[in-house]
Image 1 (tube, rainbow, N blue to C red):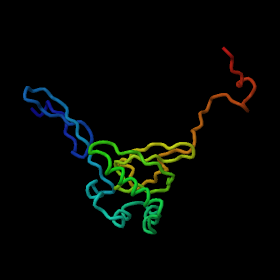
Image 2: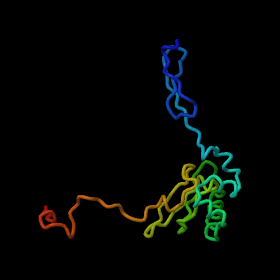
Image 3: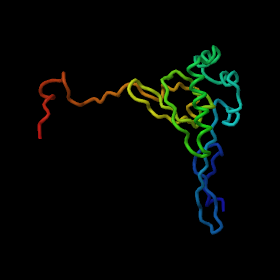
Image 4: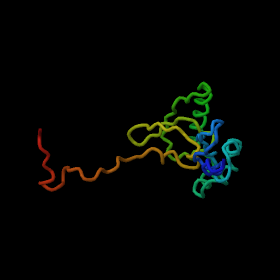
Length: 165
């Protein structure tokens, strides 16, 4: 019996676990890793105050939180909560556009959709639990990455020639 089973992994692992079915066939069951932020689960994160949460984040973000969230950040938070309340349960809330790239993502923002301005357009970002403690601007790139190997103006004459078909 034990020789037919694959080795079980710890429940916190997001790997496949084998289970013996009634007919003797082995079937696989998918387990999902429970989200933890610095040793704190998601439900506890929601219940934390800003002071308790700031103890769990990096020093730069902690210093900014301790000095207080400014008016632009508070306005964004109220607009996000309003959009979340207006959405039906189980559905994505309406996106909120913002220029505040320096806003630290806090647990209340999880599940919201934010349009972060990158200097040209608003990039729609759905806030996930893994983003907590980061800045909004980290998820909206402000430049177009360089594509090396393409000939263009300023390259040598031989590599600049592109035939007209």
